[in-house]
Length: 99
Image (cartoon, rainbow, N blue to C red):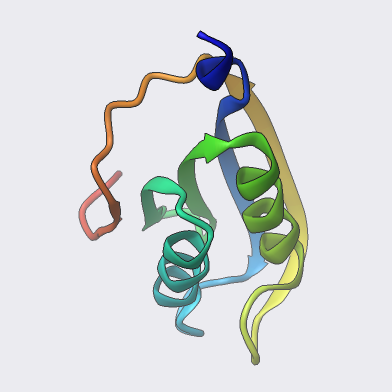
């Protein structure tokens, strides 16, 4: 049980110049490096949305990276909402058709 107490889920919305700059691909690389599962997608309003699940410290590392983003991006805001960990994801994927 103590293992699940260290795990968390974050629902994240990133605002700025975050589309057309390989944000999703870089997010997947960073999440995989930190053993974080979930998904990332572009939204029609220009934001990027992501779900991160994993150890709290690893999820926080990925969120910190989201504040910087990849080269050529400009992150204006990162809205993070922590939720109950579900363990529903086997890996980290890029979703192409959300919203």
